[in-house]
Image 1 (cartoon, rainbow, N blue to C red):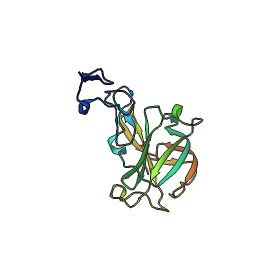
Image 2 (image 1 turned 90 degrees about the vertical axis):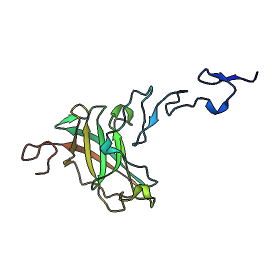
Image 3 (image 1 turned 180 degrees about the vertical axis):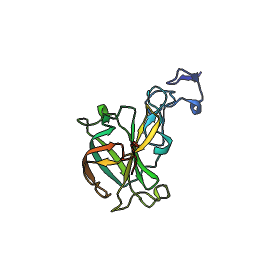
Image 4 (image 1 turned 30 degrees about the vertical axis):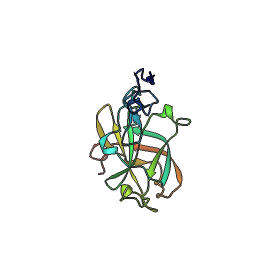
Length: 178
């Protein structure tokens, strides 16, 4: 007959049920792109981004290269996340695994309002993002409250920052703003 074996070892003559590759290039796999545009699940060994860090992708971005991020003087773990916000809207997020970065300097793409309905409220030229850290071991989101220098206003460009940190404020609240 005309039956053929597809990539998932199913032998039939119906091309409409042929298996597909997932985002991790596994035939018949179940890895998907999460709301942070990261291939997760399946055989990736990766979990989806924290719900609070879900965002849409924009055609306009500012790359903030950051050399070091700490929580209480301890570097982020490979399972921790950095999120960028415009007020209460997440406009970018990245799992902060320095092993996947260039010379252990990671960048976060901070997305701008490109005029589509998906990016309403995102950054426009001159806005200054705020940053939050998701500590996966504690399942807590902290405000970044210490910066080595002023944050460059958002443009469709890039900038470099030496240090972001979550530290205790004067009320001994980690990530507090007192």
